[in-house]
Image 1 (tube, rainbow, N blue to C red):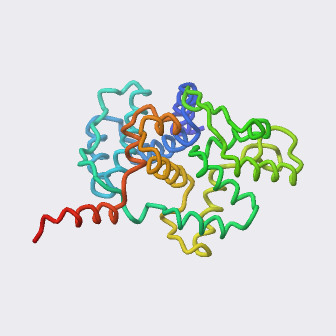
Image 2 (cartoon, rainbow, N blue to C red):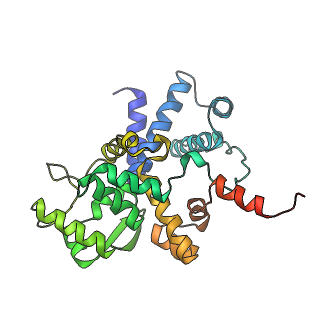
Image 3 (cartoon, rainbow, N blue to C red):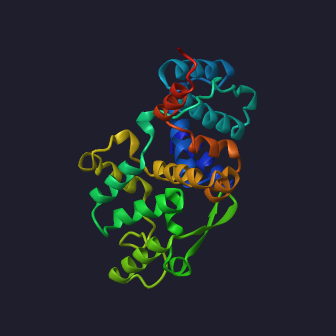
Length: 275
């Protein structure tokens, strides 16, 4: 095992011990691996981290740069080099969401039709978007939970209960009947393990051309965001939405329900302040 592999292995163990989600662990390990390659044979110093920050500022989008810096700072703290940590790039919060990343309800329906009636992929898409779960939480969709009509989900040290819509409950139970699933996880591999999130991501991307939806809009987390926007449009209760999504901070939930640039433009145009 190389020195880099040993560092990553030890860092991963600490993240697992902190009960970080699988997606978070994968993201941190990827970013730290890039960071270690950037360092090469050089000793990790504040000067090296500052050069990394400058490189990220020039070559990455601000949010991507800050995401990587967060992972690096986490690694530095783990390594006992807290004095080397740096601040994230200062960003002015945008009042609207990029149109290129926003999945509309109509585009969502087109993805469902492209997936095929009663297919497993269609059910997966509906399960994520119909309940607002994370793709990593699909493993909590069990035959027993679906029969009860609610799921108990444990993530990041918190337990929350998710209600399954009646239509989705009926479709899932029919799927279980067709696949002879008597108990346990519904969306599973042939070996009985939960489906890999990367496979779900790839299958969704494969629908884009047939559905006529831009690839930049099609990924599991965007289904969760669509659920959030639809729920907020109906209830206007951001605190309740945060509880449903499992967010610790309402600031995170605000990002999910942000209007698109097109919607924002309509509001600005209607102000009537230019004669």
